[in-house]
Image (cartoon, rainbow, N blue to C red; front, side, top):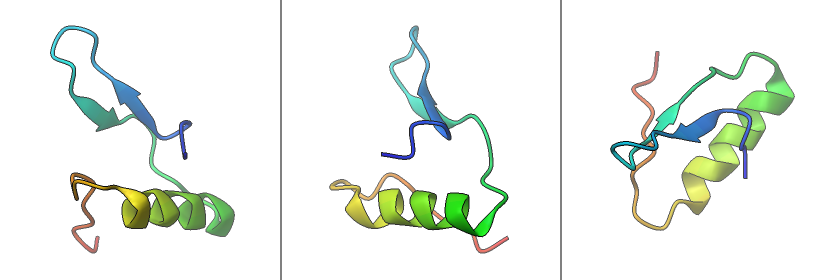
Length: 47
């Protein structure tokens, strides 16, 4: 889900945002991933 925007660091195992969404469709995809995240590790600082 929204794999174009998140990647995993192979050394640390931590997932990070690798690209910010820019279009309304991309933003919707990332917001869907945020809502579906079972552990709440995706955040939105509102910026």
